[in-house]
Length: 177
Ligand code: GDP
Ligand code: MG
Image (cartoon, rainbow, N blue to C red; front, side):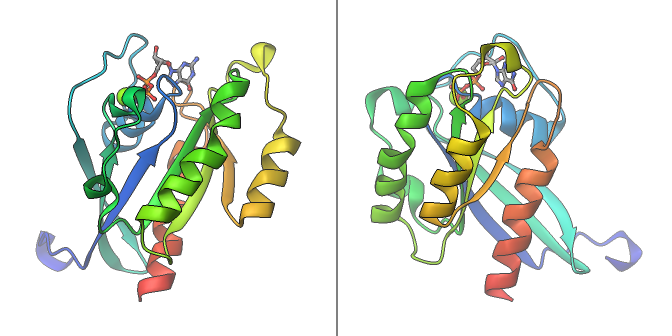
């Protein structure tokens, strides 16, 4: 804002969900700090990162929550979803199973989150095209059927990461403003 003030107009809680090792933490590292690590170690307990962006001349703080290992035990609690206005449903394009689990994650999300939540289906690791197990068409079809936004990303190459998060944040802004 004017004179370098750090006034925040909105705080949008967004949650990352999906199987372990699909790249949720690296997507968050890329978006919040423009970092990437090949051997990201899983952390214990819920944590979030923030980044403030400008949308429509308003200062929007994205507060993005990472499951931090809980997905292994299917122990993501309702507290994780509480107050979330956005969600990134992440699978790995090289792991069919992680895509097949999207329906289950979506069901859990819809059972716990606000009904107006903005949801983006994210096919991560698009840099590993040679190992692809999920076609873009299959994912598009699922997204269309479930009324989700959809993008393929690479946290490694920073492809579409910014676009994916900004699309969710902009859509939330449209809903709440
Ligand atoms: P999480 O368990 O869903 O949080 O997954 P991580 O973010 O910890 O990532 C799991 C592994 O996949 C790590 O070795 C990452 O470096 C790797 N990874 C994450 N995103 C990408 C990507 O876009 N491309 C490639 N090639 N590897 C990735
Ligand atoms: Mg993680």
